[in-house]
Image (cartoon, rainbow, N blue to C red; front, side, top):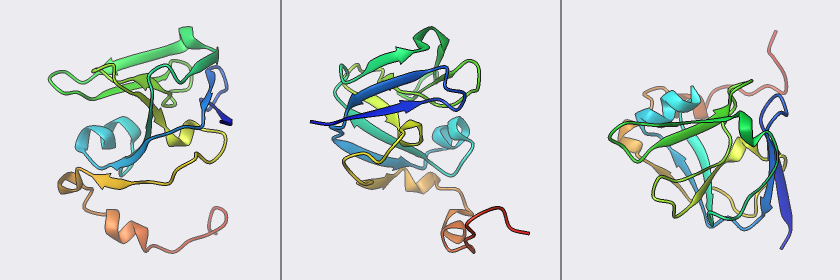
Length: 134
């Protein structure tokens, strides 16, 4: 099995794991919108022990949403989302954008679509550019 590495935006937190992800969900719930500042979270799921922290574990801050099974972990320097163990302890949740390459699987599903941002469908069909438009 190959490994895949990842990090936060500033590089203070870095990790690697076996490229053995079992699920890849795009979560549209309101809490994931707030946690990411975007339309959805893009999270991969794997075994809880499938991570080796290379640097910055002491810079990881975790927030558990009260009354929900939702958490967020992030670098306390740059704020980028980083992996964390689910509150049930049954999965390692890896933000897809934190990886330095493409994982072994593609998204399986969009979940909590009843809470989807009202502008999401139009955004999917918006104009595309290779860089910032003029």
